[in-house]
Length: 283
Image 1 (cartoon, rainbow, N blue to C red):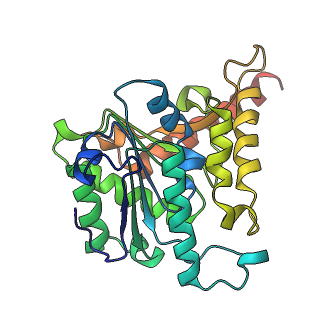
Image 2 (cartoon, helix red, strand yellow):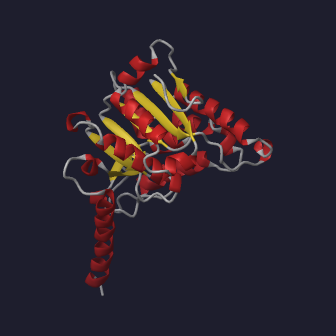
Image 3 (cartoon, rainbow, N blue to C red):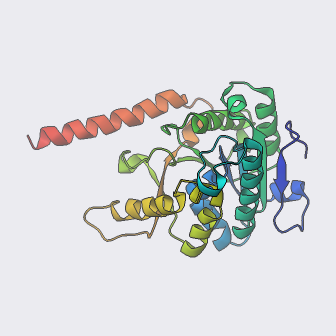
């Protein structure tokens, strides 16, 4: 398994299989921008693989983590030092979550944002050629972080480049830097993220460079999951103890499907029409 960047890191937590065999076993794959994005957005997929025999989770991080904010003990860390810390943290998360494989491609954000960058395209094509996941977790198209949106677009391009019969059965875009609660209930996917709560918290706090470095992602992510579950239905008791909202992106990966821009515009329009109709009905 050879990737375009010499700093790319491939980690098989159990050490019992080759990277090729571990990747080939993956049934749930998360392709994310940064270290800790996987643990924020794909707790549901991690839990599915822990709960169901024969399922295996795989994580892919595209960027090197060099530009993260830092304070406290990390305030004086250089970008090179921060990359090393974040690489080790992501490996530890993979070990704790019992991932089949964790791949960190170590591209710069600038390269990921560059459409058609040959290294990024090559690496994603190789990963998707070597595994056949049934479910893929991506960033969502309404995310407000530029690198997240770029990673989403690179991943969708790689998926659409596969033969039709090799494309994943389900592709979802998950909330990180913009919540998806605003979608109509019929247009959003409830990912059950309330399972394994102790592990879920450990998977977030293992990223000490972020948590003590100035960003309390641990409290924020767990709190958002609980908030989503509580505010899901106004006239019913909670069905989940934690929800990560996602949007179904499977239609845009199919032949003849809508473009991503068209698809999201239709969802925004549906939400706008719903607000307008409710106001009209009670005016």
